[in-house]
Image: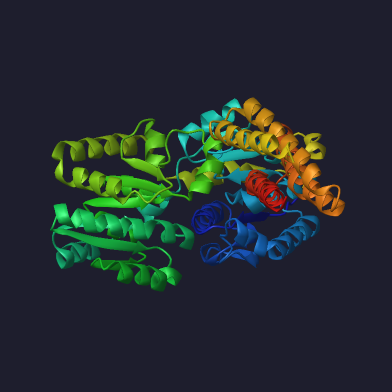
Length: 402
Length: 117
């Protein structure tokens, strides 16, 4: 067998993708130290050995922000295409972030580079028709939720389910038990934590609502103490301003999200991966997501799942309270929180359901399994990768453009 | 001038009907009511602007009718044939931003004409 290149292109644009990408890179390097990684990522991936074509820090943008940065994204895309043409990586691993990664998938596929898409965009929740794009653009899809496999199987896409890499991260990092104990001792009483999300827009929407609910909760549960989790250090000042303006006595914790969750009796969170972290620690939670009435009107016909929370979606039933709000319904939030704190039976039921769910899905080793899927592609001479991952030559010409 | 009010009423009712049918994902009804909305507004704009400000009339038709319909066609093509890498569902936002503007322009100018008549 001739000597083959060990260059892999890998792209992640969001913080979570950066963490999962870094874990995957480490797993691949453990199995094959000759691999070199090129692509797009952030700090974690750079530390794992990525030759960064563009640093994607501060590129987790939404809506109009993307339009404002369109020239930057076009430059990134152009540079990636140039890299594909000049270096011909063995495989392109694209992690979530479909806004840019779909374009890179198209470019890679056109040049005959096998495309592995790791962590699918949540098409099952909004826009299932976009599965057609994935079928055209991707050679193998690696998904992290069991129901996604069924969804993509039905769409005729080669897909494998590996489990959620978050559980690798949790089992690897562990919890600082002393910090948990310290938080509990310092605060005393019943600790309620607020986890509004990692994006500024989400924090601005949800945190004021949580704090309004906190006032109401305190009236019914006077021993309640509040923590706000700040996952992104750059938003500490922003969060502090909101908290100070509300007049609620809250402690803001930067990072250490596992410790914050573990120290809490109840978590109130935005709909995101953090809900899985909360479920992992078997903490009762309330999931909320707030959008403007106009956004709700626009999105309503495209919502195809009855659940906004991953935990409920995974369980296939409502095991924790959730609410998609277009008005700030803090009374509902407070009411649910009081019930979960004061109604022992409801609390126990919630914890029992979370336990069952976690037994089913909380298995570490996702990154390892992804690495095992990717490695065979590197053992074949260039061009043979398509045979392994079901790559059909003719489809390259029919892929989406634009 | 006699036609303004029936057309405005038709435009308003079709706007409401298209909003409701869109919200409840009744696609065929939405497309039908949207067609009624654009037809009534196009005719209204013709009566209001064509004689004295033909350029304004063509601008309104291009910007508020042809452009959103084009967006809708792009979205439909993408939905059924996956033509673009970019997710085109954002065009729905554009369409729903332009619809009320078109109605507001026609309503305001109609009322001004009636008042000044």
